[in-house]
Image 1 (cartoon, rainbow, N blue to C red):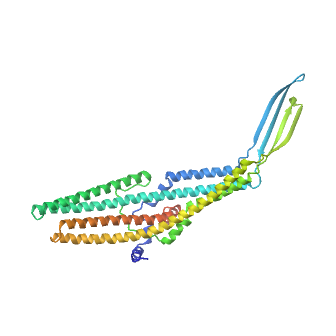
Image 2: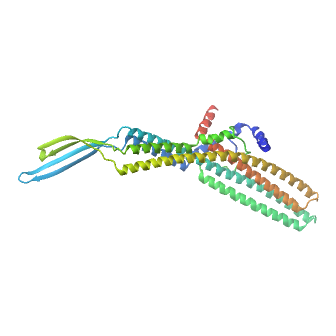
Image 3: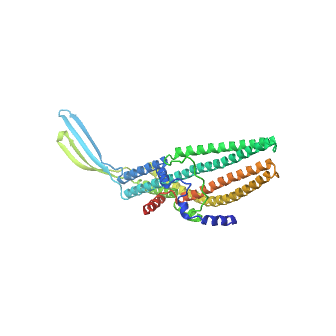
Length: 422
């Protein structure tokens, strides 16, 4: 680990772990859970779970239903007269042994696929919430920083005008100060516009979470209780996307076996009743029928086998994708923390330099141009620190969301248990 990493680790360990469980700059956990559970993508996925359950019931019961057929005929015979004749048949196909078990297994796996996809939809909604929330926090912090810069330049301009009136400064100094002030005001207005845009976007996307009038200040990056390496492994272990791909591969494998079994068609059995010559001939009998499979059933079996093979390859691709996400989360969290630490050191150094330049200007040893430059550097450094802090917070929260260590149903249950204990 680099020296900066050691210093950052020591700094973070001083903060209590409880503070991270509910950071001050995050929305209340109850509201987050409500917003995620009621998000349209999550509720739509929940409806698909119900659809999968209904489809599982359909597979369990099967499509084999009783078929009733009948006919009535009025027949005329020369020199004999007319006769009423009718027949009725009741028949039902029956699944061959093993097919019903495959249907039940495919239905159960389909439910698991839908449930995991619903959890993944909730996970994606949590990532969206985190991104939009941090957009708002970052824009608010940048706006407050820019307002402080504007106020500082306004005070400096007022003091400079008095010096010009006393012929202790040139009109050129006023022009330069006014240009710097106008630039700072423009930057502040852009930050305010970004803050309002982030606010309305978040409010429209997650209306269940009420927003305060002003965004809270970005919290300092704080390592979670679990190590980043452990969280990286949990990203893969708890991935609902991987589970959904696994169950889908298993389901399509079962479907392929079911279609292969269907190359031998299910037989139908039934009874037939008939009456001919107006009841002079009557009878009852047992009937059986069985389709003879051909090229169509063979092609259907080939198609199902190819789809099962494709699902297994999709699973391998999903494993690679989630592994890449886990590795990127880990690398990003570490890199963003180091970047924030460097940005914090830079901001402090720029602020110290601006303070010394201010004192030099008051003593008449430094020109106004140098003072404005030092202030601009300090402002840029503060903005860079805010941006780096935001990116570090985003990275830490993302690896926790991806590992289902925060804003997950398990997290909600733990929170409820703590509330009850209190």
